[in-house]
Image (tube, rainbow over all chains, first blue to last red; front, side):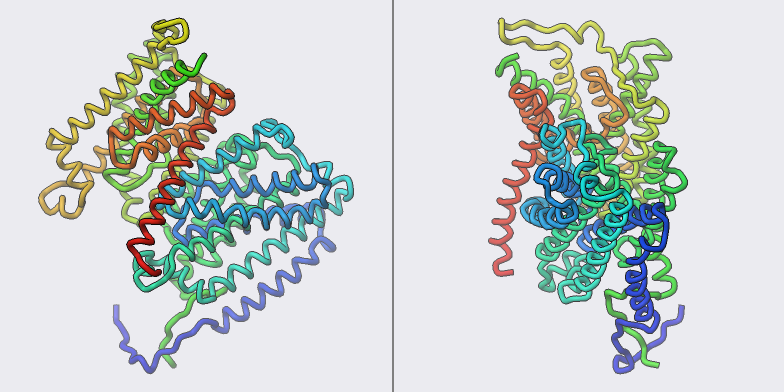
Length: 342
Length: 293
């Protein structure tokens, strides 16, 4: 390999490239176009895209934790379940409008994540992972013991949604809620990662100890990510409730189930851990996988786990990360690059 | 049931949890990884014993003659194929791969053994108990498991302290690179540690299966109980694991004495309280040593 020597004055720092600025404009345009989908396409398309949106949210949130904070959580389903049950609580029991309840539940999820983060963020590696899992289990058991929330047999939000909405209207409103949540989280995370705090978060991702020694406040950075991920997973949980209407509290397939973590890990690993665009690719990959093998049930999860292991071992940067390092392509740049002046 | 009986039951149950936790603790001690598939491997042990008892017709105890060597091989191969590679790729990858393994194992078990609930027959001892007084009885089977657990911990203690292999294990745990400089083959040491860890997991899984029924989804429960025992007892200490297991067992049985549905929840609450206390202590300590951030 030959190394070109470039003198410092011939270097420049760049963030946007023509490709990435046109892509970012394209994404903005796409979000605008997506808003009109329910008016133009079939109910089936609308329903499928709603599912894709909550998968994108889940993948982005898990990646924010693991890819930038180095926090592998196998307990984010705690927030998914919390969001779903909070909407049931507010809309079914307190007759709130279900879509307002989805927003309020998300804010509550962010608030819940603060005391939880204050304890679990002191844990490292596997201790954090299992600590989060135990918390998810504990909350699931507490919910299943509450008979007003349906107890162990679960509950449904059919009443809250169907009382004031026709099925077609509900599908459309679910879609718009999911799109709005996804867009806000996507843009919010993008802006955050490009800010000063974002620079320190990326430093934490690359080397936590080195970052700390340079004066980066590691715990603050992780705390911010934890709260965002908590809010985002709660939002996803509220969409999942609106999408499937009935939920169960216990078991791996339930709303508090560990299978959500399996799906999140799959999406982020396949797309590219620690890249901004990767989780979106991963969400699309999972969505496609579900279209083909979901009916098989057991084999779907065997495939999910197997592919996640293979990618972690043999393609640790995932699809997008690998493409990025081969081609130096950045579509939604959150970092800076040094380039020789031409 | 009464309170005294609940506490005694919990202490005996703690033996099972300590046995379950031993391998998890050993792997963390030697390789600094938490094997998220540990509980699932224990469950695989129980299913292996189930197969052996069904097809060969020997008791669940005798099935260990086949299950334990099998588990040693599984552990060795697992280390050499998956874990060794994941260890080289940083802190997160072992967690991700062992989590993937957990998902794969649970679903393969469901495919091959159906979601039905199974059990292993503990024999006559399963129902026998020593009636100490009108309010206190000690089930023989649980006492046996506690005894085996103490024996395994003691054996492991001797192995680590007294044998060449134990010295190599401790040296590798302390500093793998330096150990290699003086002629220790760290990869072989890791493979042996994982083999032992999986064998103890399988042993615990078989006793778990004799004590209560199991289905393909209980692997994560076994992992969580094992991990709770390790953390409550203090990471890195073999005998601490026994104490942690007993504290966890007593929390669960006393919780169940209040309300049967509180069994697992009470253990989680005690575990989370320990974590919170440690977090408070640690945040204080960090502030003291870091000074102004």
